[in-house]
Amino acid sequence: MSSRNGHRPHSFSSVGEVTSLLSDVGYLADRPLATTVYLQDQLGKPLLLEGPAGVGKTELAKALAAATGRRLLRLQCYEGQDETKALYEWDYGKQMLYTQILREKIGQVVADADDLPSAVEAIGRHDNVFFSERFLAERPLLRAVRSPEPVVLLIDEVDRADEALEAVLLELLAEYQVSVPELGTFTAEHVPYVVLTSNNTRDLSAALKRRCLHLSLDYPSAERELDIIRSKSTGLPEAVATHLVDVVRELRQQGMRKPPGISEALDWARTLAVLGASEPDTELLTDTISVVAKYDRDVERAMRVLRDSSERRDSSELQEQGDPGRIGNDRGAPGEGERRAPVPGVDPDDEPAGAALRAARDTPGRHGAGYYGESTDGPAPRRPVSSSQGERSFAANHGRGKR
Image (cartoon, rainbow, N blue to C red; front, side, top):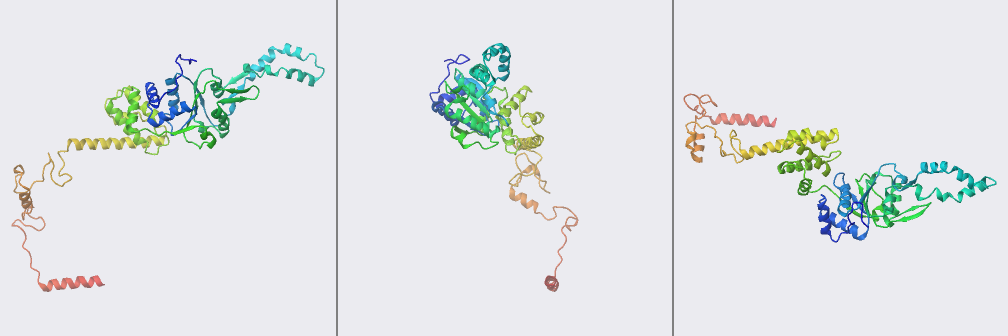
């Protein structure tokens, strides 16, 4: 049976085909992820993806639908959600409308009843009229099971829902069926691709995990993240994209309340491209920091990272270009393009040998008159010290140390 968009639903033949088809729709899957998707297809089991927000969990379900030509159905979970919003509910408004319209017919049904119990019994023989598929309001889970065509069912952020909803999911995840007491059990004609996502806000039950293939996703390597930005055709120059990836990866190490995910990195790349960024520009990154930092504390940490990154870049550029005003280098000797301190009596342009230069620096009187007791006539004469003076000085110092 063909899908809604006219493409035949696909069954993967190999892990390599999974990688190729997902790449064709703009999703770059690594080997572990592609292998897990292939096993999901071959084994017919749901896939549970856990990891931080923004690493591509939801996007995988969308890409899977696009790559296989299946319709995407989505259940967005939230706190306090009950089964009527996930499975089905009865359209009571529609039932009441039909009751008003058919009031005359109902009167005919109970016309021969002698008392209230008899009237109730008469109406009860026709209650299947009002509890039929005509009045059944499907929600995503039941819609996925009853769909006449293969679908991808995304159960997004299941960790945000109450544990009671997990129990409702167990029948679907194990048997791909949903039981409606008034009508019976519906079983899927086509096994759906079921993708559950979790941001790890709470631990999921062992019963739910046992029914699923499980994979933990994390932030990609710098090379893969750069490839992802390239694949989205953001229009950002290579140098800017590389610097952007480095900054984003550093931000993730700062303990931010909401670390930037891949989706935020892509949004930042598109933002910089729209603003015409042609080279790494700290001021432009600072002006657009709100794209990736969503809380005041995160903004402060991000600004500090940008300042540090700018200082490191400036320092690196100075080291590459050289600083002609600096004296000496890491070895303590003058570097290329640097000036030595002047030495009295030595022409700096003569570039004397090291030994001659040291000898010149050791020349008595080189500092001029009055420096450390030197006079205009040369070094001050040394005063002789008698042995008796030395003994008195030693005795005085030795005695003071004892006291």
